[in-house]
View 1 (cartoon, rainbow, N blue to C red):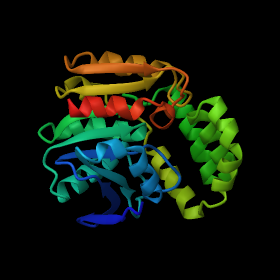
View 2: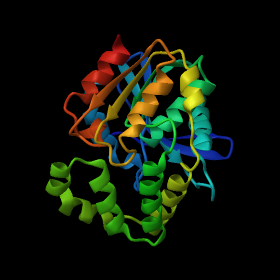
View 3: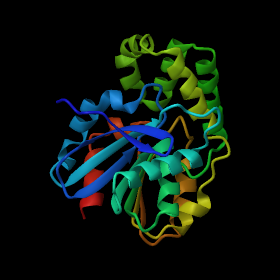
View 4: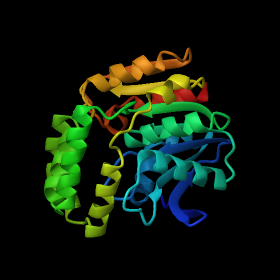
Length: 267
């Protein structure tokens, strides 16, 4: 399957994205932290979410091109919301994974008229000590251009142990394809999470919210799910499901994950 990569421009900002599906309901997906642009995996993502293609038109966004030296999660959210609006999407479902979930909360809070439903995958309402320590370590490895060490630590943290061991050699091979510019961009995206706190934003939401969290999340720590639930419970349309055994990246490794998302958005 060949998925065209498109570019949307808002002012001086360019953002790459891709779309698939023919459904009348727009679904926007915002991915989490990654060294390589998610658009490079467009075909794999379209295959992973193929059950959405009949009922939804799915839009998946990279972060903006030409990242500034400092770029907070709030700025990422603002830029992505502007890109979504520039495509003429006035009302849509929204799914954010990990850092993408942080952005999605802020988008839903700032644009309640646009977000019909919100799903959060392995995300958090604030960067706690565990998350800060893990992400800061990744940033330091990227800053020193230690791509293999970064990939191994990153993948060991996000995947369950059996998955990591099975594909460890592949992760090493993938690290050899990373450019210095991509590592520098990754540092900027990591540093942008510092000080993030969306507890008030999530508590104020009144649209339906589904949080798919991981009890064994080695990136955000076990407390992230509890903090997310505490803020979300102020919304009568908030629900949470807790995965165990699939790690932070449950959105890629749990076999029923896409079905849970589909059932939430289609209802």
